[in-house]
Image 1: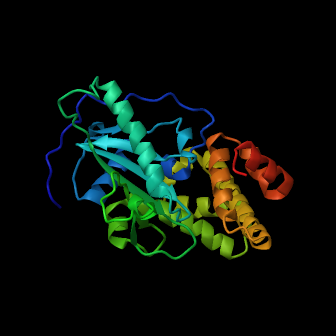
Image 2: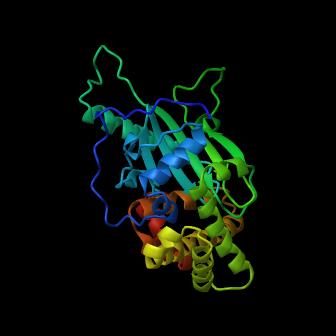
Image 3: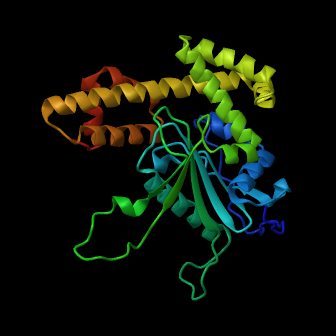
Length: 308
């Protein structure tokens, strides 16, 4: 492993954002809440050997409603600004979300450190890294690179885009990225726990029983035992909420595709995705569920957001 001199980041840091009590944490974020585990993950990804947790500064924007999605973790270590997310679906708009999020982080960085955006001297910025950890049900390669430029409409002549955002998507399902899992025990434990839940579901268990059984099995085997020992109820509630949200969104996407085919609207799925993003951004969870069962309500929400 390439040695790198350990150093603390400059005291010029992003300010901590006020906690949004409506924000429901995801299990991935909870699993890497300890800076030592997060630093270990960073080292595993980058071949570094940082040991001091104080070398890492968490910069997650808690009130990230402008994204339309809940962000997981962002932090500074060394001279890098890192955005880590967990996804169970391969959303092709991840680069766009990353661009928006990085813009907000850099805006805060500039303001906090007293830099002059219109000054003559160039502002030194930490290097951006964006990694998404994927563990959905669809088969994906170990690593995928998504680029914002792939979404741009081509100009009449060849030219370079003014902006770019690259997302490194890593498949962390069981059997994928073995070397990374060997380097980061915490990530392996997370993948094993989720895999255990899915195996229980495949064996016919209901979701609550599947999660509880996986908790017992993993805790006995020393997998996420520290987390499951102190946050068992919280973990159960998180997973049930995530499962319910995922199933609900899958249902209404499927229904919207069917409606789109019936009405000849190819854009039906795109409209639905936009609506879901806006509802989640506004913390309107009940309206997300209402849209799943009531097409009239869904049409009303489309009109409310000016999508129809």
